[in-house]
Image (cartoon, rainbow, N blue to C red; front, side):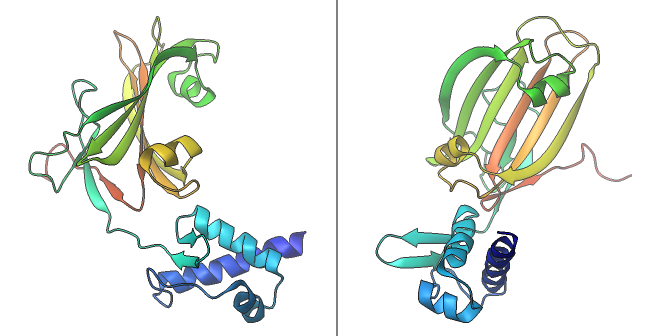
Length: 226
């Protein structure tokens, strides 16, 4: 099993490198299963597993009855960070748009009250038994999904600590995120998490998810260098 795991990772990395250096270009059809078996000297199971990984990463796309192709990847647009006064505005604005990003808002799910997810409880320094209100919204621009925002707000009370912090991470897209953002399950997403713990008022966590291949998150200093 360990040998097969190593083999499919090797094949996936070789194909990933070929896509990265332009040997395999967008919309190119990759070699057939038999051709890849001969080229790498591995079983069909290994090739299928490697191909599955690259499809999940969004590098390849399988067309039924027509083979597997290199996905055409868009030039990432820049989303500039700002802090809106309310959630009628997204946390990031499209730099290229003349008036920023003021897209249509889609309510993905109605506001619900749930036990705090483990990560949210950790960020707010509360127990997972604490109730939070969860609201999920999708922001679109020119009918294209741009950013998925999930807000967790303490249903009552406040935290002991106060302050605001933000962190940016990356991970594979979850099923719901990929579906809503019109991406592929497993392809990389960028996640910007804003944790607000005010001295007065209710604490909340705002999690923004964007497809990494489509958008670059840009943070600018409040003022220029001295």
